[in-house]
Image 1 (tube, rainbow, N blue to C red):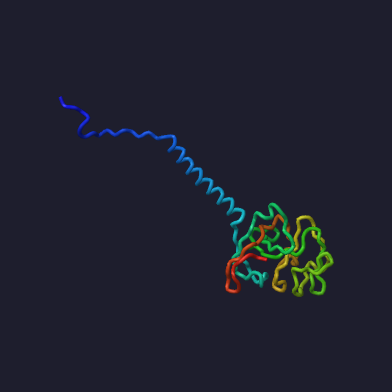
Image 2: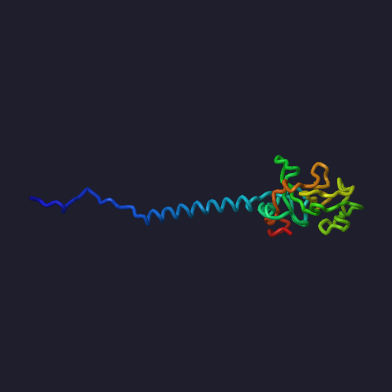
Length: 193
């Protein structure tokens, strides 16, 4: 009588799946999903980029230069004088993004007289160039709640809050604060002041 057990066997022992292996697989899956979620949140709040259109922000920013926009900052706070903001004029989603500097905030009184911007009776520290066209700021304006007066750093070549078709920018139309610029021929990359 021949003994079985020696020789060829076509039967394999089934491996048992251990609970430690299952925990390891789930920890990897959870880690990957958490990383995707965090990356999505960061990109949504901080990852927006846009390009500057036109020469209205020279010498701070140049036409075609890419800027990064912080969309989260104004969820927690409001724009301040001197901030460079990105907005859609009158919320028009078919328009390109406008990039301008906030020169007056809610409650401020402003007027452009003899080519100079006055905010609350004082010369603006943010617009130092002569302004030939005062636009709607020819007469004194008082900004309401959630309204900001935004002007380009190159006011002679800027369509901004002085234009009747744009006017004061509502906080709901502001996308975020421009905080970083990429390198261009005229200047290096860096933070926007």
